[in-house]
Image (tube, rainbow, N blue to C red; front, side):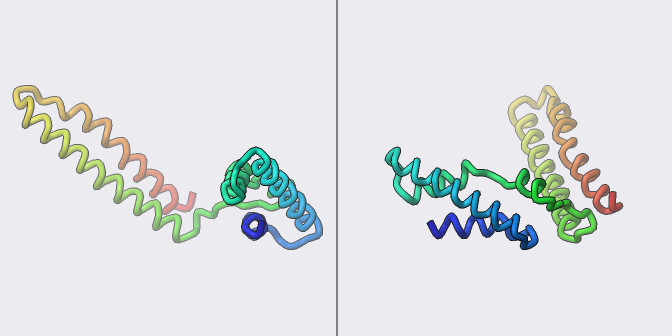
Length: 141
């Protein structure tokens, strides 16, 4: 059950220490332990029961809002800009590869009909949307 305790402490690491936090952590830990015991009674092994209880518990966004913790993502974070730029570059290269594949298939199997242009327009929406997401973060919106 040490894994459950570690998981609960990891979930609540962003929340400032308070008496209410400790009470909620104990309740969550108790609920998870009860779920594990129920799963063990149903025939699951302890490790599988612990993992299933953790997965079924999910995220604690509701509990964070109940405790008054606001977790907003700041657009001024340089890692967000870097990740958006990486997504843009990935989408450009991916689109070029997909368009190249369509072009090859078109000219190899049916050179008399040029149809690769149509899926090209659909594929180009991907880098275009990534560009506007990157631009939005760059402007600080």
